[in-house]
Image (cartoon, rainbow, N blue to C red; front, side, top):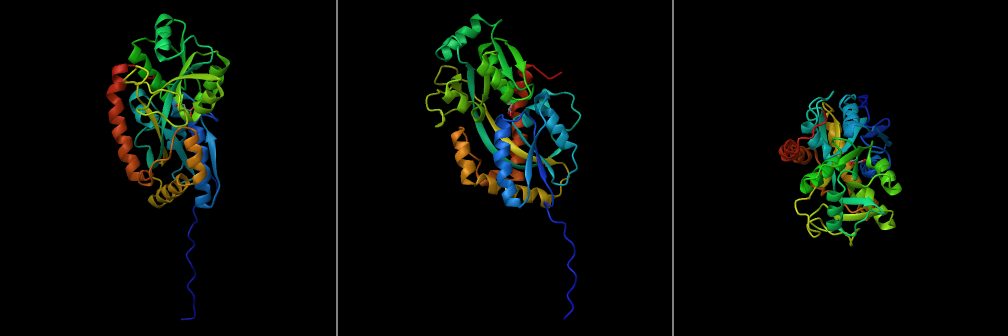
Length: 312
Ligand code: MLT
C-alpha cells in the first residue's frame, strides 16, 4: 500500500461539440423539435450540442451525411416518419436507409394540419374539397420533397380525393410556409409544430387535423373525420439516430440524455403550445425506437406502393 496506481486515461464523452443534423430547413418543424431536444441534451451531457441544417431531397441528404459520419457520438440525426417511408420511396440512395443507423430513442409524435393560404375561397373542409375538385389544374400543394411528412400527407389527401395536384417542393416546410403566408402557393399539409402559431395569428387557414382527436393548442380545428373526410390520418413521429457502429455505451449515454431532455418542463410546455408532447420515457430508448421504426416501415410500404409515386 502507499503507492497509488495511475488512473487509466478514460476518454471523456463528450469532450467536444456534438452536432445534431436536421435534414430540413431551419425554423421548420423538425428543426423546432431538434433545437429543444439539443438544448436539454447538452445540459444533461455537460457539453455543447449544436444543430446543423442539411436540407434537401426530402430529408435524404441530412440522413446520408449522418450515415457517412464517423460513428463516435459527435454526429447524430433528428429525423421523422421519413425514416420509415424513404426505404420504400427511394429506389436509389447513396446510403443504407435502415442499416446505416443506430436508433437512440423516440422523441415525439406530432399531429398534422391541412392548411391553406388565407384568402382561399372556402370556409370549411367540404368547401375546400369542392374547390380542389373544381380547380384541380390551378390549385397547388407545397411540400418538403419526396420523403417529407408534408409529401406523405399530401399523397394521402390526393388519394382520399382521387384528385392529382401539382406539388411544389421546398427544402423544408419553413420556406414553404413563407410562400403559403404570402399566398404564392395554395395548400399544404404540415405539422402543428410549424402551423399552430400561423393559424392562431390568422396568416393561414386551417381546415382539418389529421389525428383521431383534436389538439388543445388548436381547439377550433376539427379532425378530418369530424369534417367529413375519414381515412385522412397520419401523425409524424420523430427519433434520434447515431451512425451505425456507434459504441453501445455512447448510444446509451445519448438515450439517457434524450430522456432527461424530454422530461424538462420548458420543453414539455413548448411542445404542448405547439400541439404535441414528448413520448413516454420508456419509448426514448434504442430498443423501443428500433421496434417502432421497423413496424412503421412495414406499415407504410403497401400504402406507398399503392400510391405509386416514387422518388425516381
Ligand atoms: C421540416 O422540418 O421542414 C418538415 O419536417 C418537412 C416535412 O417533412 O414536411
